[in-house]
Image (cartoon, rainbow, N blue to C red; front, side):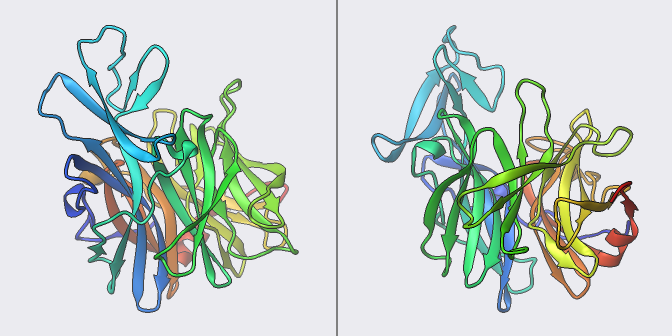
Length: 353
């Protein structure tokens, strides 16, 4: 597939983002939602920060204390035998697990879609008990005059939930609470009603059977979701034989709804592909990518906080191009574009569709 990566990739790095506090350090900026407003491209960046420490034996972790109503920092000594420090992403104590970084959302704007001015302050950050360890992976759906943002929230209460917020001006945000219970993430809300109902793709995880499959659910109001149906899973012998999950918000083509989704191999190589869904019955799959649209090949995609990863939360479809803003190696924001026709030509019909 003829994918054109931006020569300036990665277009946003951790060094481009100002820390939200003097004692914090930006370690990753990735997995961004994207929209166009007039002549500007707006990104809602996931920014991950950890806490600076002058003592190499001390690890400081940030989290939102919902009882105090503020972000706090807790220190751990690496010599403490009661704690497990083997995974750099988390600290396991006898009674609780802590993450070593916390994510928030930051707005970035651009006239050309490549060179961005990044706000110095967070647009949204952890603010309640479900968001104790941060908010992650925003996906933006415009319905009417309102932008709806669904995102993953991390906490000791249940683990990972999916929450919903909305805005009309990108200055103030209204939170609508948890819309999918643990452990369900990778939610993508369709941008219009279909036969009078809202639909959303989502990825519940079965702890008992270890399934990580995509489902589709419906709602009368974007808050209460039901009539959950299985949609698709990984495919043996393909680039997505390990796991699958939703990525971008689906968009309508003359052949149906196209969803750019992520899939991983059994050894955790994350790629992007596409699935085409029926226009009026989106729980029916018409066709699916034979080969990935985008796979980790460049150094900034292969090497980073979590290497061999390209991961997407939004696209723009303009002038027959699919413009992909994606997280690379869980560290950077990169940009690529591909002709919509090329994606469609690479789809393989699904039996029984």
